[in-house]
Length: 372
Image (cartoon, rainbow, N blue to C red; front, side, top):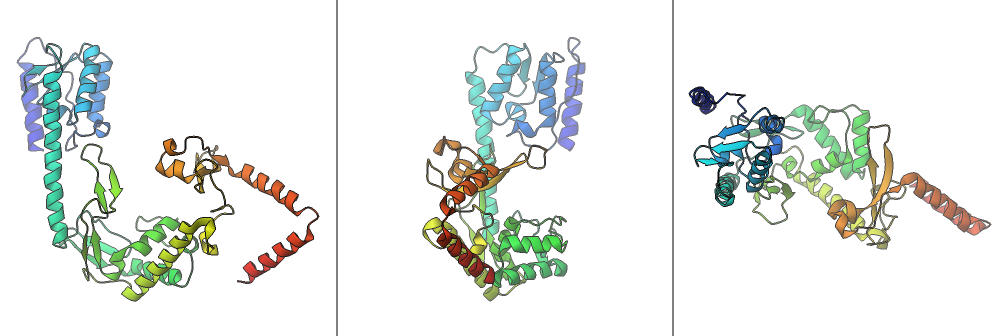
């Protein structure tokens, strides 16, 4: 903050000393990284004012203060240059309207970007050393535990711990995550964020979380690069650190391992698809694991389009296309659930017309399922 105030005073004084300059405004994103301009509201406001003709020159301390990403630097410098707006980089003594070419700007922008990448690498190294020592890194809190930032320790929240124990007990009893989520929603029990609407994905996240048996695994995700800041699941690309008996457990290791065995078994059933017998709890919807993409042979999954709008509709889409990218299955399209239901009913009518043996078999199967 002291640095920010000093810079404001410096540039106000600099502009006032020039009779041919008039200060339009100060544009400063305090304590926001320059690697991604989309998050810098003041930067975007400055660019808009330039495009609206309110500014004909931008003064900035250095290229790294303008943008620490070579592509962004060149993009915005070119955009402003076309509008006749100069950008003056003070430390490098570069005026974008008078310089002969972009080569110097490219080189210096690349240096600024490299600086960000070096800082990121050093920070990563420091975080890994902390993880190795068993210190909590990047942890805020999770259901059942409270985090004290001053001591960097976690302690059990008894009220929330009861919900965690309920979830594990129900899961070990054979109840699926979807049903447990509905039970908690109906009971109006609150999530860590204070919501009363529970999702099955949240339940599965709790079941998988090793913290509930007192252990700590760090490095579950990693940042791909400091420019895009994209985070991915860590499947061995980066080091992970596991500490046993790190803190007080909420559930016993035996219960946790039983839950993992059930989770793994259900996952096996999902991975086997139609070739193996799936347990009934893994079929949430009528067409789950029953629709196959005609182009790539992968399963279809159920999705909502335009949710919470008047145009909301339910569709089924190819998993390869939605999870791995349209380019891997370019011809697949979302199919309206109503259309699939109607097609199934028509097909069923054709198969079952005047075939009492099929009807009898259906009734037997239905009775067997319901009796379970």
